[in-house]
Length: 430
Length: 170
Image 1 (spheres, one colour):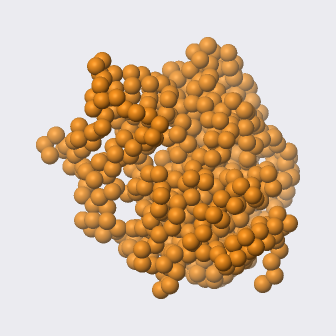
Image 2 (image 1 turned 60 degrees about the vertical axis):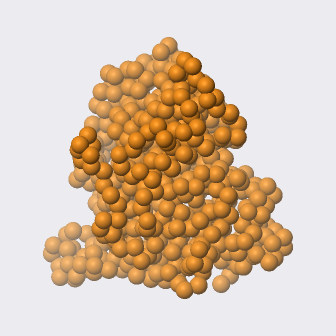
Image 3 (image 1 turned 135 degrees about the vertical axis):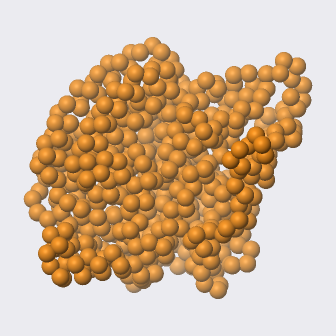
């Protein structure tokens, strides 16, 4: 195949200019290093278009792979199929109104997204959060991390060939959904955090469920380890696959477990502690190998640490209010809204105008989401709507690392590597 | 306003104002974050200095801001981290409304590559000497820059041709 004219050989049906540039970019990718043969007598070279509708790509990720036999010579990613312009939407919403949109960013761990937005708004508007709310948020965030890692575990092992595993991790996720249902009234998109605290206190039911989960889950995790750690097939499919060296990981901007599996102990909970992470005891798991197996170990250990954090939070959980009672900063409780005129006016004002940070202020606050550094930059113009809100999404940066990672791998490993990097397109595409 | 700079950041500010006295504009703090404003013409030299001399080896974010003012309309912010010194700060630079153009830093931190493409896609800021300069979210056939303030929230009807729902029949 004459690889010099990839774009002449394909006939895109839509977005013609876009597709042409994409194929051109694939053709141009490190052309300085490789000299392409015009001669290919065996016909081993081909361009493989994978996605955007492909079950193993975890959403609408599209890959263009240039193959030589089974080897990926180079790869290009095409993202944006789930671009909804949430940053633009944010500029036209009050801060609290925008929160349900964050649920739909990283839809595998909505709780972390809510907390990330709230902490950023609290930082820019100087809101004091009650002690109890901090601990409830930490419990929620860690449960969300386990939920997200469980989905990663199920799909990644399924990509590697073990389908039944997916059902087992989903059984555990089901318990987490029930907990979230009890905490905030929603199973999936929770929106439980509020600016200035959380929506409501944990019910006794929810407390009991969390305690049960914390007691039972370590045994499940042990079973997962037992099934995978010495599993020949799983081991061979992941070891030394998709290796990201420490220098390259930092250079390309990888974050979260992907960066930690490459040797850098960069975890926001430890780097710039928020909420009350400085008062609990936990470790930041790291590995040096940087391959898919290292990412597996890092995430498994993170689940252990999350359970440890939740246990400590349950022990330390202080009594008190769950939301600041400053009427200019937070919503009133539902009791006040239903039974007093002032409460209703207050609720109306919060919904209509919302919290107004000082004019010209800007702030950046990041939390450690399950996928990595999840940061919100907010610039205020003194009104209830942000002037600019930038979401620093971890999946976006990890996908950039993925594009780099795929060169030189085998085509059969593509899905495993995507599974190991664990991107969520809702977050990467914004 | 009094600044409360850590030793490391003070060192950065001193270094920048000494070595790049022509390009250094100001340093300010807001809600506890530190922002250093520089001129856009020496951005590559400044970033190289920050990476090589000050050990800011990790670029976590790069984004644009539309200030919607008549001069220096666009602002580019670089979110830099030094893992060794556990410090984070923002480097900022402003660009004019007409032909906003700035040198790419993708050679310094490769992470900048996609982030710069996103800024171009959303604001129309051109990055010169970028290794793979294309739009990232929107298709190339799209003619507008959606994060600019004048772009309507509901979009522009007909601005993008949607794929046929029955592709075989064209």
